[in-house]
Length: 237
Image (cartoon, rainbow, N blue to C red; front, side):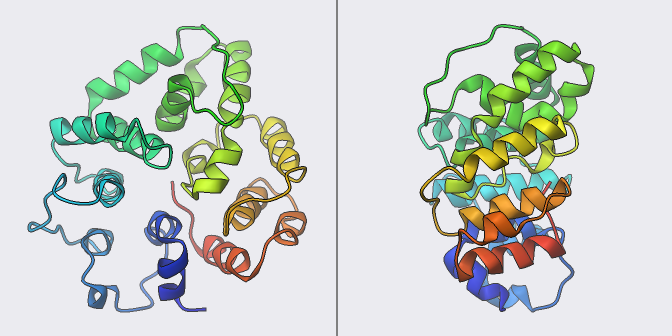
């Protein structure tokens, strides 16, 4: 399997995973600003806001995850622009939380409100986005019963994550109740289909909580297996 194949078919997934992989190929030959950040070199020529929103968000998240965040106003603008894009919104919110202590404190307050919204299937609620963006920093400080309710709410977004290959739940694996995560993963198996790579992402999550990944891999194809193999070498947090 070549990493370039993953880039071609599942670019978000590849970017989200590569930070935790050993450097086995010459990524710089791809002339990619995100890869240059992942390899530890800031791309001074790249200007967020001048091109593709998804690329801008991934660039901001890569910088924030490596403790070289973009200025908070830039990341704030990216989050605002991303609210109309399900695939970008949780990633932009995560980038903003990691880039701004003020935004992180806002997320903490919102997640402590103990007001449970009603969310239609297939929708993404702002409170779910807050949990995806900052749950790893906040859940441990919440009252246990409220944390369980919040975990159940955010896990309703798992099918969306698998369909958009966002790896949204990576930061939450260690803080979500394991049984609740297992239940949500098994519920996925009732679905008729997921996007290409979606079953591979579900299998990665399953393996991370010590489940046999085969039931999810059996539902997918070669691309799912490739993504799973890549995910077993490194995992985006």
